Picture 1 (cartoon, rainbow, N blue to C red):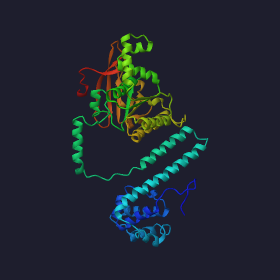
Picture 2: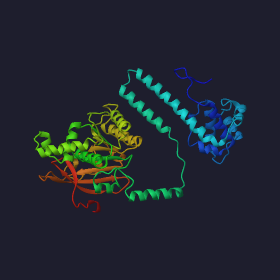
Picture 3: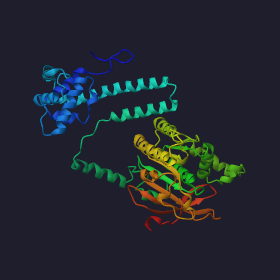
Picture 4: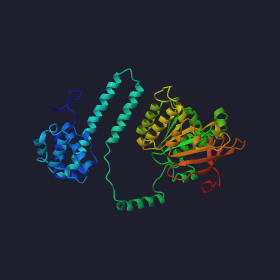
Length: 448
């Protein structure tokens, strides 16, 4: 008798498709290798069908050259004491009687997979319903768990791709390289800094976890915002910015100063010349057509960060996310007994996983230790946890020897870690008046 869910309805399944698929494997063992990349045991609805498929997996694992047929399968089931639970010899032999065609096996497998996802979705919905009634659970934890479960369910629904012959890839790869050479294909999100993009082989790539480190007042927020503004203004990228330290209004004021090249001090005090006011209005016109989305909640928990990132991706399809900064993200457990470096390590791993889940790069700001005052920072100087250095694909460290009265302050940008490219040093100019980083004329840092 089929099981029913809490609504009294039988969960989605197709007994005929399951029988036909199992029968097709017994008629042609090559079918198994096609469908085993699609299905796992639990994708089958009937317990007996799960056991049959698991026995087939066991046969293949023990000896991949062994043919899966009625004789070898019944021997495996007898060995595992599962023959009766699968319906006995008569039922297993009947599986091959009503197979329309073994050529439809992949279609049956995908149908079974889809129905399994529907059943799993019902389980998630029921679990969320029960958790919602449980008032002992923090509602934010319930929502975050739900998002995690849905994300995992979606990823499990992806059918594994078959292997490819390298010979078949040569022509499309060469065509893609030619398109890159002609500038027809984006190979990364360009930062607006020519030498930095050169180090990054064209820009920041999808799924990269990028860390920007600096001591306070060196300008890590200004640098991150400069890159973000470069991206939205020059390339029309869709950018998300989570600010745990600075308000959204302050960030927009800085963005307006950079785009309009208006003295930031004048903007803050409201003492503006007519020319400056006109420049600001023009900058407003520019930014009003761009896609920059800012969340400025202070002391966000890790679950909140993940929820906001998913929301920006889902609703606005952002292409990159900036987070300012990791040291202000609170651990979801909020357990004072857990050392802060362990909490940061957990948060860093979560952000790393989030880049894979959302398929976008995430740029995270981090402070470096006090020991770097006056000295060139290095990877091990990233504060609070060595996990940040370990998890990051790219680490950029900002350093300035001393504040000077010069309008443009020479600042070193160290590409301290670059998993997929070179490391080195770039000189940038920090324009104090407009709170923005700029390229220095004739800087040949990348070649030094």
